[in-house]
Length: 439
Image 1 (cartoon, rainbow, N blue to C red):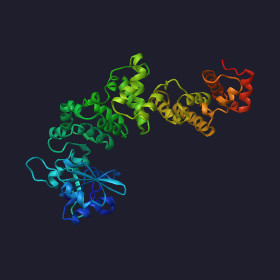
Image 2 (image 1 turned 45 degrees about the vertical axis):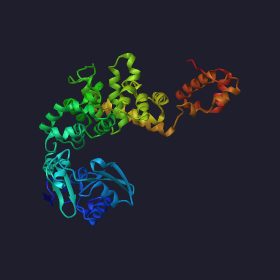
Image 3 (image 1 turned 180 degrees about the horizontal axis):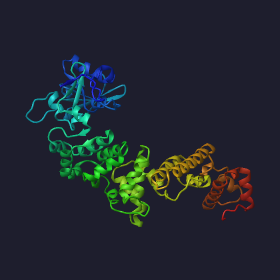
Image 4 (image 1 turned 90 degrees about the horizontal axis):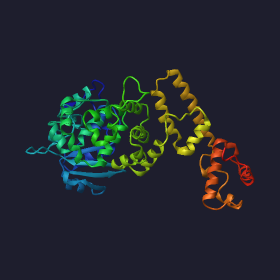
């Protein structure tokens, strides 16, 4: 059916000006060669919801070979040619162009293609001539904020079990509810997630973590019995009680509440989860547990390294009320990580049982201190020192361990008293052997 009116906060009259120029160009070029073509899926869903569109997909009558020939003057990548999908690159956006899909025993065409889509809210298509095409009541589900598999849920899951995670991700991104039949189908088929590569699972998990509702997303993963296939260690926090927790919440609930107080940053949100997983791990496993989990989910080494650095600190005991303590922290984690670390600590303050006025005062004092330190750029690493190893060797220190140890002692001193970080002062003190290094 075609909708052309504005209703219930939805944009049901999509016009050419709303469509990406490259997508319009592709549709027109396919039309010029006699092929029907539509933009389809998430891009139309987002336009209807008046949200930003990140990807543009096109469906058409043309076969992959014909698509490749039509766009031979552009970069063409056969990313899924055997499934009927070709990627065309235009200045420098990637457009996926797919041949109509259909269920077994039915003729390929737009309506059959839409009925093969994962969710009803994604079963929408548009072109300038026909407007919005909706064959699965997707517009009504958008209006009612419902995530529902298109057609038979069992079939959609069998086609791609990752769709179970995608249902959770869409619910988190748009604050939608997953309808009961879809929940039941996921519960009954969660074991099929074992067939999916860890990289694909990671990508959906990251989107859930970065959504506006990460707490709800992880609760859904737990309820749908999917969390055990993504991060079973987090599931281990369920039922664990701590003295400082309130309202009978367990460590799982507390962790998820803290997530909601963090910016949409993958490092920070992973840190929050891993910090508490480490806290309940065996002592001998704590050094390795973060690396083990993140490598298993196929995170990059740069992310693993940063999360390891951040989770080695005791966030609950570190205070930002004194600039000296902040400089000491920066010396351990790096000045570039200071603001991230503060976001973690601030989440604890916000979730604490203190009075709101007390929380506000703590946050204001801390942020003033951090702002001043970032402006002052005090010495917090060996490279910031006004002296180096060559200076010490010229004074008679032995190259190697002795020089290294002395530089660390000097750093400790200037972190406490930044004003001493002047070459003349430090060399004079080292030469006279009267730096209070062991105080």
